[in-house]
Every structure is written in structure tokens, then in C-alpha cells.
Image 1: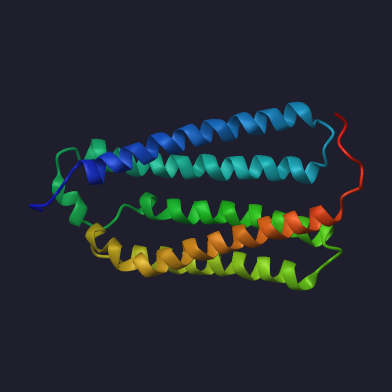
Image 2: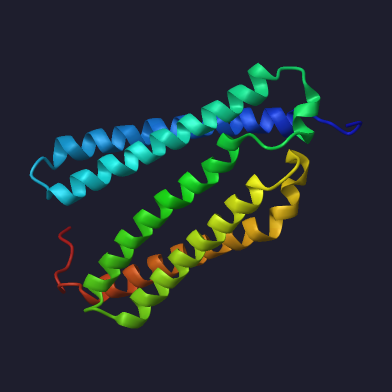
Length: 192
């Protein structure tokens, strides 16, 4: 506890909370704009947008609970950092990965459609997506088994693997969509 720095712990957590609040505001604005601009869209997409927004809202609620617990309820109690992690802090990771999985599956369906049902590329995207979900689930289970928040660093390898799989999935999706959409060009030139 001698090397405890509240800027690197509580300060970083608060800054992350502020950033996530801004992101939720942006997401809410995007959802509102979607419903205003596309009232005739398929019901599936409307339910998907509402569902994703609700998952993100619940995730923000979990983040709020964790930050409140650490910075208000336990204000000045430095030993909270060696207590078991608060359940809401652990579940924020799970909610984030669930949201990412839903979005990536939808992008995989786009790749499937634009690639004339390319099984290899779509399968790779789904394999990476579900791999990330599996590794993040392992992270969640192991995080609930920790005796102390200070031991969260013990899960660094699992966390890094999950983030790496997520990044790899994003790269494959972006490259695939770029490639297949490039091949679907109509040949019309831009007007000056």
C-alpha cells in the first residue's frame, strides 16, 4: 500500500467512467437518429438496435455501480483494493463482449452476403468472434474466483488474449468488407 497512487487507480477509473458516459450518450443519439431516419426498416433491425442499446445501458449501470462502490461507498478505505473485486466491475467486461459478439455476428452476415456466401472468410470471422467470447467468459469466471482486486493482474494473459482476438476479428471484418465491397463496384465514375 506504500506505492498506492490514487491517480493511477481511482483517477483512472473515474476518467474511464466519464468516457464511457460520453460514449453512451453518442450511442443513444445514434439510436434515436436511426429510428427517425429509418422508420420503415425491418423489425429485426429495430429490435437489434433496441437490444444493443439496452445491453449498453445495463453495462453503464454496472460501471456506475462499481465506480460508486469504490469511490463513494468506500471513500478513503484504501484496503478496498485488496478486497474481492466488486461483482459489477467483473460483469462490465462480460457485457462489453456480449455487445461486441452481437455486432460482429451481424458484420459476419454482411460479409457472407457481399462475398457470395464465402464459407472460409465468414467462418473465420465467426470462429474469432466466438473465440473472443469464450476467452472473455473464462476471464469472467476466473475474476469471480479472485481473493483480491490486487490479483486482477494475474488475469493479464487471458485479458490480452481476449482483446487480441477481438482486434483480429475487427481487422478480418474490415479487410473482408473492403475487399468484397470493392469488387461490387458498379463502374460509375464520380461526377465533378
